[in-house]
Image (cartoon, rainbow, N blue to C red; front, side):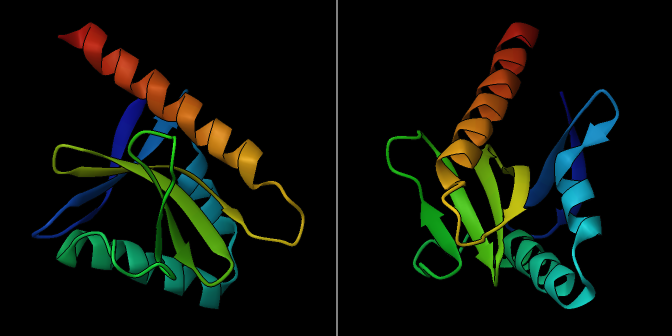
Length: 124
């Protein structure tokens, strides 16, 4: 897996994960309708510029029992991410519907994070 830099600001560098030429987050963003896409991009730029909105539960949720995994929220869009040094690494995104897909999405984010961190350990 490789990091792809998406947004850079004074606080953080917001990156996405790509594997085998496939970037799940970028594909998700590109598939959103324009108003939703603008909200998500604005949220990610704000994270880069001002830091994670940890005190705003409407925009950021700390996932208990998942290590350093966070969920960023912009309207119906949800993005899973974790912090690695100065980088905020976004694993993937999905649209929140009424169906209970969230536990499966959290598991997916945990697996992606763990795989990327294991690769980083192997490079040392």
